[in-house]
Every structure is written in structure tokens, then in C-alpha cells.
Image (tube, rainbow, N blue to C red; front, side, top):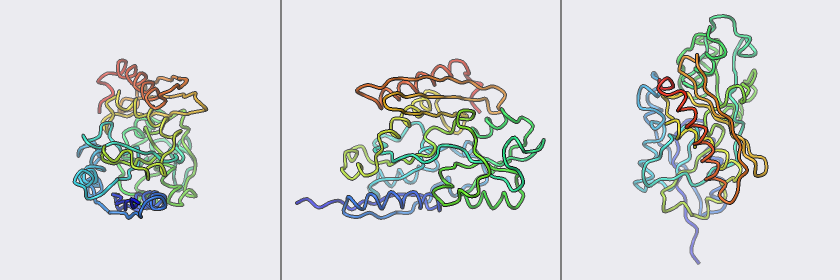
Length: 307
């Protein structure tokens, strides 16, 4: 009898990354020969004083982990899906996507209950170009304060008075048991989240994409929804240099998708919505819907969308 493989899981070493990867490790270990986490520090973790778009984009959260995967030092990598660039390195593939958490952005503040309640000229902390643009579209009077770091660091800086409010992914707060910090949520129809927000990505080498243990961390509904959102991301040449939001919802075989892109100052917003009744190739059909809407937005917005 062939023994089950022992799975080495590459992950960033932040508290959130370890929490998310630990959840997946337990599920993988239950159907394999065991699993362990391998901590890898990325360039995105080391450089905290500049926006990602200034130092190389989203790939700086995945580069060193993907190198370990290609070198055979780990067997899979677990990432937050919203941190995944539109294109992956040759030889690697996202082979499984687990059930999604809350997709929404969460509003945190010491003194104010919502974005609308912030006074004129208040400071909102974020390093996300999307959150910046969406916020300025609704509240052009606000001052955006560049704020990076892990969840605990950003919450601490909020309480230090660096900003009057911050926006974080609700999913990460929930997984860390910090949901009680949330004052309110941003409506995902008014401000669609980052493509893939709330979902995790299990990345492997192409030749390992059919490994049986991956079935333990695979969700059909989330996979289809994320395929649509990332289809739009690819069409819009998504990186940290473009403010892109996307929200897909699947009910039975009916998929609806909302995509938007904004100019960095939030002054102009380009939106498209569409739906599809999925057939025999639901993931590919979802991706095609996302690409079609993304291409329409790119044709209308053009270079104005690039930071």
C-alpha cells in the first residue's frame, strides 16, 4: 500500500498568515501523512514603510514562498487570495480554494462609528490603492494616511492616534478573533472588495495539482466566484498600481458579478455588472465573464486607471 505523503506548507510568519495556514494544515494533515508549517519571510514583510506599488507590487508577498515551492523545499503554499498577482510564475498553479470568509471591508475607529460619521478632513489609514480610491470617491475631503503592517500593528497605530479610522478585511479580523473591533462594514455593492478577498489560495507545482489531499481544502462555490473576480483582475492588468474591486455571487448555477476600477484619486469610477448561467465548464465560464467585464472597463478607463 502506498503511504500518504507528508505535506510541507509554506507560509508567511505573521499572526494572520499562521492562523490561516494552521487551519489548512489541520485539514490537510487529516487526509495525508501529516503536515507542517514552514515559515518564510517575504520582502513584503520586511519593507513596511512604503506602498507595495513603490517596491514591486503584490508579488513581494509571494516571491520567496514561490521560490521555495519551485525549489522543492515545500510542497504547497497558502496565501490570502487578494495578495495573489494576476499572473503566477511558470510551473505553479492555484490548485485549491477553501470556503470563503466574509468578503467585506471593515471600518475601525476609536471615536467614530462609520465612514460617513468621520468629520471633514479626518485621516483614514490604508496602504491599499483600491481602498484609497473608493474612500475618496465617497469622501474626497478625507486625508489618506499610508499605513502598512500586520493587523495588530495597524490597530495599535489607530489607537496611538496616527489615523482617525482604518479599513481592514473583515475576514482576517474574524479569523484572528478580532471581529469585536469592527465599528461598521463597508457595503460590498457600494465598494466591491479586492478580487478574491476573504478567500485563501493553495498554490502547488503544476505536476502536483491532482494530489488527493487537495480535495480536503477545495470549495466549488468559492472557486467559481474567485475565478470570475480574478478574470476581471487579469483583464484589467491588475496589480497594486490599479484600484480594482470585484464581487461575484453564485446562487445555484446563476453567477452575478460586479466589477469596478477607479482613478487613484477616486474622482472617476468605471463599473460593469453582468451575469451568466453556468454550464459544463463553470470555472472557465466564470473567468470569461470576469474578463469580459474587465475588458469593457479597461476600454473605457484606459490609462487614467493606472497609478
